[in-house]
Amino acid sequence: MSVKNNTQVLIFLLFSSRYNKKLLGRVRAFDQHYNMVLENVREMWTEHPKADKVKKKSLPVNKDRFISKMFLRGDSVVSFTV
Image (tube, rainbow, N blue to C red; front, side):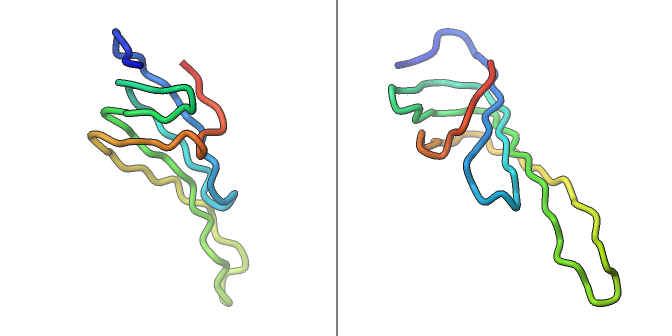
């Protein structure tokens, strides 16, 4: 099913709890399994570096990247917000 207007959504993904990934982008098409074609996607995640021997605790680092077009499989979608 295609989408008539450029709806921007925030999608929470099911990956390892270490990275906690989110996608913010525009939906172009989707189906009943929540497979989606997305455009202008900003992928955001938090990395927790392993503690060094010298440093006892390292601070988490927020990272992101831009993806112009992507296909997202529906089984990795936990929730999404319009």
